[in-house]
Structure formats: C-alpha cells, structure tokens
Length: 497
Image (cartoon, rainbow, N blue to C red; front, top):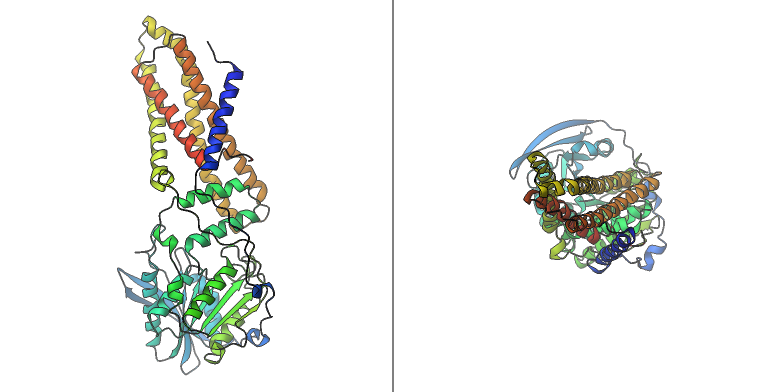
C-alpha cells in the first residue's frame, strides 16, 4: 500500500530537521569577530612627499639570462643591468604563490633598472613546491643563491643587495634575511605575516562579504578548509621576523582583499621589535590591491617612486622620520584560525565518503542492468516485475541527482574563485549558484525518503528482491545516505538559507 503524501511530508521534515541540526551541532565553527585595532591605525599621517617624488627612470639597461644549479633542479632567471658605469644597488624579486614566472616582474624590474638598480627575477622551482607541500625554507635557500649570484658581480654594490617579496614571498624573504647577513635590505609587498591558514580564511571571508554571498557559503568552504591537512598552512612567521635585522620597507594597499593588512602590520612590528630592529618603513597606499595596482590595472600612484627612492636612498632611507604612514587602512574583521576538523570530517574521511558513494552509484546501475538481462518469469519474478520498475526509475534519478550535487559544489567553488578576482556584478551569479546547490541537496533528500518509502511499500505488497536488486538498492540508497550526511555537515541543510 503506497505511503501517503502527508506521511512522506512529515518524514522529509523530520529528516531535514535532523540534518540541519547536524550542521549546527558539529564542530568546527568559524565566526571571525570584528577587529579591534590599535588606535594608531585609525588615522595615519600622510606619506612624506619626498618618498613619492618622481624617480628619473630614463636610463638604458641590458638584459642577461642565466641558470643556477639549486637543490634537485636548475633555476633560470633574467638580470637587468643599468648601462651607467659603477657599482649599483641590486635586488632579487621573489614571487608569491603559484608557478612564479619571472615575467610577472618585468614592468617593475625595467623601471628600477632604468633608475639605476640591478634587478634579478627568476622562475620559481617546481621540485619541492606544489599545492599540497611547500617548504618555505627551501624557497629561502633559492633566494640566497640569487643574492650570492648578484653580490659576485663587479657592477653590484654587495652592501646594498636586497630582496623583494610579494604575498607568499613575505613568508620566504624573512627566512632568507634571518639566515644570512648577505641580504642587505628587504622589501615586503602585501606580506601576510600571519599563518597561511589565517590569511586564506580572512581572504575568503572578506571576498565572500564583497560578493554578498550567503553565510552558508562561507561555512561550506571553511569547514572544507578545516579538513585540509597541509602542514604549511599553519606556518608561524614570527620566529623568522624576529631574526630580521636588515632595513625593511613594507608596502600595503588599502583595497587588498587577500590579506588582513592591519594585523599583518602589527605582526611585522612585533617581530621587528623583538629583533631590536628599528630600521623599518611601513606605508599604506591608497586604493592599491594585492599587487599594488588599481583594480588589477596600472600600478597605484606613488608605488614605483616610493620603491625606487627608498632603494636608491639607502642607507639614509633606512631610518625614516615616520615608521607608519600613508592612507588609513580599514580592516573590518580579525583574521581567525579555521579550527581543525574532527576525525570524522577530515580530508581522508571525506574522500572515503565520496568513494563509497561512487561505488554505490556504480554498483546500483550495474545491478539494475543485470536484473533486466536475466529474463526469468516465475510467479515471484512476475511480482517483482510489476513492483520493481518504479523503484528502478527512482534509483536512476537519485544517481543523477547525487552526481549533479557533487558537480554543482565544485562549479560553485570555481565560481567563487573566478569572481573573487573580478567582483563586478557577481553577486546574482553567486546567489544563484548557492541556491542551485541547496536545491539539489533538498531534492536528493526528497528522493531518498520517497525511494525508501517505495521500497517498504513494495516489500509489503509481496516483492522479494533478488540478490542483484538488493545490491542496487543498497548501493544507491546507501551512497545517497552518505552524501546526505556529508551535505549536512557542510551546512547545506542549515536554516535560514
């Protein structure tokens, strides 16, 4: 006897409430508080005009290509040398996360070379650096090889040979500076100075706020981050900063959505103070993004001139009249650690859940096909032949819905990554994507409950499933059940939406 719609509605409601409770009750929770910054950041003095005076970047330079043997591989780079005679200050560019091509530094390297600074840019290593594993100490050793290569040149002033690092390079450069006094100065651009996990979590929260994404989207992503076991994500930058005794220029943009710039500055000052280093200059540039550009376009006014004047003016510029100056930064939320996921929600368990669901989804259709090919017609088989087709159709739909949900989640994450770069007009697409993910999760729940009810009704009416029908039902219903529990943990059933 078919189960009534009222009974099914109650069952769906109860299961939905149970799954929503799972999302609320299970850790970890991520809710960064508003930042209470030091009052000094509430109104910064303007940057001294002398630091932004135009640099005469009009000289000629020549370009040289080189290769250096490093640990496990060769590193290739480009040096740009001013044609004017004498020894020049020199600087190594250190890239942020990713493949780190030397070409990304071409505009800055050419500007400085025309102004009288020898510049070196190189391609980041591929061995020992990937998405899962990053050895910042190994990267710092590569930096020191580049510094040594520059210092050995007759056209370079060894005492004024330094290192420039952006973003992830802000974790690498202080290690190199703390290891060797051969580094004469360092320039930090958009340097996080907090752990990579705190930086990524803050950037995620900030970008989702700018995209006006629902709070549930943040919970989904941060819970996923909590299950990632990459050791480098919890790297502590403070010990390396405490070993930096060289002059430091740190530049931050007030429109940077990728790092908690106020807390990054506080961490930098804390580390340098512990090192007894008073030779630091920190400047906030108005409207500058993570790459010191205006919305990904041209460099923000004053960036290249500030950089050039500081390097060319060393050692005098190492002791500024104002340590902290520029446009006033506004950081709304604190950078909080994403709590580590419990054992049942770690990356291994999530992978196992998806694999088991996939096995069930594969076993189900295969078993259904086997049943259809058998073709026996006993009285029992005739009863099954009447009751089985509606159940089989439900199982097919459940497989497609489950696969659709997994694909929708991946597509939604890719959508967020894409729009985090270009946020113009993105919020309708983000909201639509989130609604699609939630709707598929609820549809999967409805299909699971109604399929279980159909199986129970069939059993009551005399259906005696064969071995392969058991396999089909157990595979699809079990796989969907696993996905429902996983979806509940990641907040897809949380209320409000």
